Length: 335
Ligand SMILES: NC(=O)c1ccc[n+]([C@@H]2O[C@H](COP(=O)([O-])OP(=O)(O)OC[C@H]3O[C@@H](n4cnc5c(N)ncnc54)[C@H](O)[C@@H]3O)[C@@H](O)[C@H]2O)c1
Image (cartoon, rainbow, N blue to C red; front, side):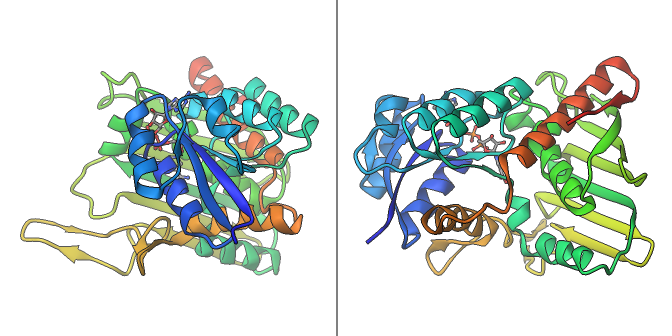
């Protein structure tokens, strides 16, 4: 018997995946779904035999719901998170926690004051490659970190789809801003960013942002984020994380190093097998590990791998990136 009943709010690419995983995990079941586009809820309800709620409140208050996945657009996390917390439901919200630091504080306060658990879906923390790299750093194989480099580039379809609604720093950058901070174990004190806008002009979005970071322990960081890579690239994602320290180096490559390649007559592509692949008829990969971790930590009353304050720290850094872009100067950061 499933121990936790889930509602999913926002039924786009990620909401569909959350819903499927809640329906497939043995310890959870999908109870209700809601989207501002009612047809999306009706389609998912027909597929999973759950409630197509006609409002946010109807989904959250549906009988048997104890956990709520918030998978709305980056800038639309505040309301569903606070309504769920005030209704006494544990919240798993997709990254970024919000695109406004005040919204982050309001969501965290709502969870704390209502005694519910809050986790933010920083899925890269659940990617085995990034976890094993973290273990190598913690074992002392790198020594004192000198420099840390991150890259998260996506093909143009991603920039066209999401660009009008958020920025590449909030959509992609927060992943590595979090991982870099997790690895280095201290805060960034200064951020300087430069951007370029040549492709996503109609979307009103930056194509690419390069960011330099200076950390409390004197280490330097560099983060590359882009979502206009030509579609001809065989992998949707091209991500790197490289850490150099006084004793060693740890490097992670994702996307272009995937061992699976499918070729047609005109092009080859590398399907995602790390984050959300479907095999044995079920959704697998890091996203499943993440949702399973959230459910298990609630059932067993254990700490999450990522705290809400960690997720807020990534948003503070993304905000500093935009402040630097606006001012054209380095920005001091205080968490
Ligand atoms: N962890 C990851 O790897 C990953 C990948 C992609 C997206 N995301 C995050 O997931 C979230 C959703 O992204 P997506 O790609 O699924 O977007 P999407 O555009 O595919 O879906 C968003 C859905 O939310 C609905 N929606 C918007 N406002 C709403 C509201 N107030 N109430 C109810 N529904 C509402 C929209 O109608 C849409 O169906 C974003 O925060 C994004 O950054 C995470």
